[in-house]
Image 1 (cartoon, protein in one colour):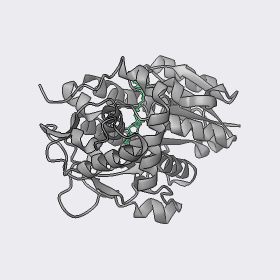
Image 2 (image 1 turned 30 degrees about the vertical axis):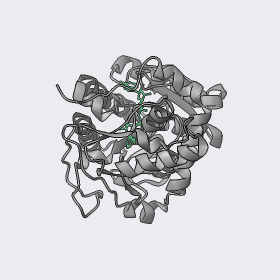
Image 3 (image 1 turned 120 degrees about the horizontal axis):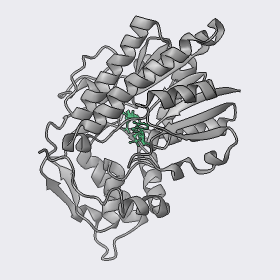
Image 4 (image 1 turned 180 degrees about the vertical axis):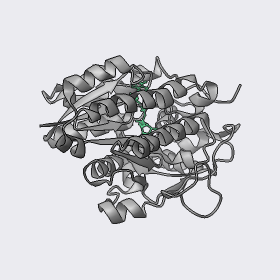
Length: 352
Ligand SMILES: NC(=O)c1ccc[n+]([C@@H]2O[C@H](COP(=O)([O-])OP(=O)(O)OC[C@H]3O[C@@H](n4cnc5c(N)ncnc54)[C@H](O)[C@@H]3O)[C@@H](O)[C@H]2O)c1
């Protein structure tokens, strides 16, 4: 049975990937994660009990440790999701972003390349290294247009710059060493198990905790939202059928203004979890000082992955958002621990 090595499998998207592969039943998974503040092994659920699942506590910047894991597990492929991911934290301090996203990716590439070089040729041909990245590497759009695989790199936040560096390293390992990589650049994800500092869970939880819903700037920034399970479908399609050396941009053609996302959350909560005083959650919305360097608009043209790999998003935005809100209402134990420890809802990233 083939083995997939997933980095960052205790995070939001990585845990969805691991759950899916384990439930599909035809692969082993090794989850390599250093359990930063953003990790939560509870997100694995029953997948963690499978005999086909192994967790390895390791930092991807630790070459010796990684080499041992490649040796031990002999993976057929790598899905590289481990990263520092929160823009506001990258504004507070970029060092962990450089460590995990840049140094970590280069160490992982080197170890994987060494491993791949020693494989017999049939196994070399089967091997894939899928690097998971973001549309934020392309910077900000004004009114018109969409990002695609040919868009210029113009990262604006330290997070985006560190992911851009990682993308370039992956490209170079392919071009220079012939290492079989594929890169994906995806738009904003939403769904269950997302860390409460990100916009959608942050607003759901703050609303029901009776806190102000602080919308950055004028709230007219646009993000292109994709359900995490649709992202997983795309990543598995890329793993199975993606062409070596190619890049695929992933998105659902679902542009939403931040303020509209917040008012939609309020409307759903007004129905599902009405305030004790009978008033609308929209009364908690307040505008706060904008994020420094805040990108105005992201939008993805996913034509290539649709055409070449037959991928299509399956989830409807309105229904997916409602189900996500229901999940946070029904799974308080998952986020209440975080809320009392790693992240208490404080404003981050106002600059130094
Ligand atoms: N969330 C999004 O909307 C989105 C969109 C596009 C792309 N991405 C990319 O997808 C990937 C996963 O994002 P996410 O939202 O699930 O992130 P997340 O912050 O929820 O999880 C990241 C995981 O990586 C682990 N990690 C961090 N540094 C590590 C290191 N040095 N060694 C080992 N493990 C480490 C953390 O412990 C955590 O479990 C990232 O590469 C991110 O850039 C995310």
